[in-house]
Every structure is written in C-alpha cells, then in structure tokens.
Image 1 (cartoon, rainbow, N blue to C red):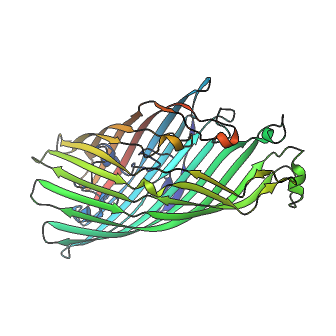
Image 2 (cartoon, rainbow, N blue to C red):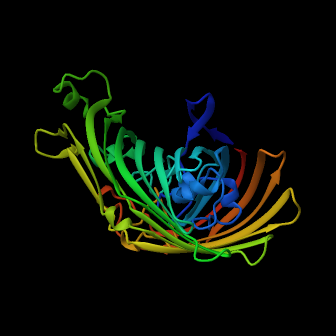
Length: 432
C-alpha cells in the first residue's frame, strides 16, 4: 500500500492536503469527524470549532475559545471491467487533515474563526498498459483552503457570518503517449502535466433559532476561478522523431514546454434543519447544492507544439476536453445521541448524485451516484477536551459507459465502473 501525505506546517500543527474525491465530482466533504459520523449533516447543529467550515454563523455557539484538529484516512477503489480485461486502481490511502480556531468576544455578539481544510481533490492511478492508458494513468488534484470568517449575532435568534477563502491548487495529469501511431512499432512514450495556481472566493452563512428545539442553517461558498501554470513533458520520443526536438534546441528524447489550464471550482449552497426533542437526541436533514456546470471543459494550452515538416501534429499546442457537468443536489440525514455525560454516538446517511454525464465520463474520475453510511462517537475526555472518531463506507452501483472519449488517440473508455471507499478519522477538540 502506498501512503500519500502532502504536508505543511501551521501553528506548529503538522497537516496535509488531499488528492481524492469522495463527494460527487471532485468535491471533498471530509472536513471533520464529528460531522463525518453524522454523514456531514451539520449545517444547523454544529457546536464546535468545525463551525468554521460547516456554518461560520454557528461560531457564536461554541464558547469563548475553541479549536479542533484532525485527520481522515481515505481508501478508495475503482473497479473496471470491459474490452476483454478487468482491473482496478492502485491500492492507496489518502490523508485529509483539518484545523479550526474560533474566538468569541463575550458581550459583543461577535466571533472570529480561521480554518485550513481541503474542499476539492482527485486521485486515481491506473495501469500503464491498460486499454485507456493514452487517456489516463496517474491523476492528482490537491487543494488547500485557508478560510477567515467573522460572525455577528442579531438578538437571540439570528446570527450571520461572512468570510474570505484563499485556495491553492496543485495538479498532475499523466498518460501514456501513442508514438506507434506516428511510427509503427514504436514503444509508448509518457506524458506528464504538472501545474499550480490559486484563487480567491467568499462565503456567507446564517443561523436561525425559531425555537429552543429547532435550528435552521444556511451556508454558501462561492465559485473560485483558478489558473494553473506549469510544465508539460512528453518523454521517450522514438529516434525517428527526435530530429523534431533538435529543431527546437532540445537534446535527448524528452520534450518539455510550459502550459496553462483553468479550473472553475463550483459554488456550494447547503440548507439544513435540526431538531432536538430532548437533551440527548439531535436529528438533522440537509439539502446540498453544488454548481458543477462551472466545469464545462478542460482546456490545456501549451506554449509550443511539435509538428512534422509535412504538417502532422505530434504534440498539439491546445487540447480541449469537453466536460459539460451538471448541477446536482445531495441529501443528508444525521443523528446524534448523548448516551452518557461523556459519550455521544452518531450515525448518518447521504445520497450524492453524480454530475458527470455519460458522454464525457473518463477514467480520471469515473463517478456514479454515491451512497454513504456513517458511524461515529464523541468522548468528552476532560472539561475542555473532546475526541471524535468516525467511520464511513461509500458505495456506488456499477456504471456502464459507452461513449467516444479517447477516440482521437485510438482508445476507448467503454466498460463498467464501480466505486467503493472506506474512511476512518479522528479529531481532537478544545473549548473553554
């Protein structure tokens, strides 16, 4: 098993960013383990420092000071069968961390909170000799979001929050290159595309408490437009094509150029209602909208191309992949039960429809409608410290694909895809 852990330091806490997609598309929901134990149905009832993510308006519900740090370990598998073969993605475990800090100014109805989390990610690794190797082998999309929020209370029933989001992105798209198309009998080359970029967005949140038993939460995060730039390499040019590299002043059998690609991360709107019939039981139902129509194409623009003297393009200067994803609405339900003064148990379920239409689905992210079942437990270790642990299982039905993706590189992605994922996490919280 390979363990991928992309790390950075903040406030002397060792954290990292993620490369796997667990919600529909390449959105990640794994931001907290109390939330994970309730299938992330938390926008109305969150009551600790994870409010920075779920609903910043609820930062006024967590006491004078609160913080939380945690991590989730995600082990996804995609199974493929078709074109006379069966295979699955490499056995990998991804690490998704989170950190939240909240300070409330007592008597002023004001709170400030900061968080580091991963809103989006993608990671798949397929065989270098599979039937769609010219379309996808390794894929990684890593993001890291820094989010600063201010919340204000208006009376006893309303609170409102506004925040700013800075998100950095790091992408890698690999695939084999079909040199045999140009010179029959040539071995495959290898294409490596890497890029980094960042973007800014904003978020808004509302918490309304019409009664002591009912809370209504709303959280909105804006679209973030990001331009990623970096290098693109095509490795192992056959000897018959190496003179084309020499004309560009390159030695050896590797071609390298710069590129840019734009990714528009979608807007997100979550609306939820929680009901607490007694001091022990809390139930919540959330509706979650993701504006995936922002991801309509992947346009990779290189600064140069490789063309033969007869005008045959070997490496194009621009590659456009149509996506045409759909906006989707997910549904989440979570339950928390206070079994003792120190122990709380939770469970939840969500249904998350895929935004990916059949005619543009490819092996980099062969998604289908997702189901998640979650279990969790929270333990109050002291008057100030809590520990949350959670486990989730995600599954999809088999999705049969029959499209024309890959036809331009003599490949096919047609076949059956099925996804399963195991998630385990632990968080430690502090409040006073």
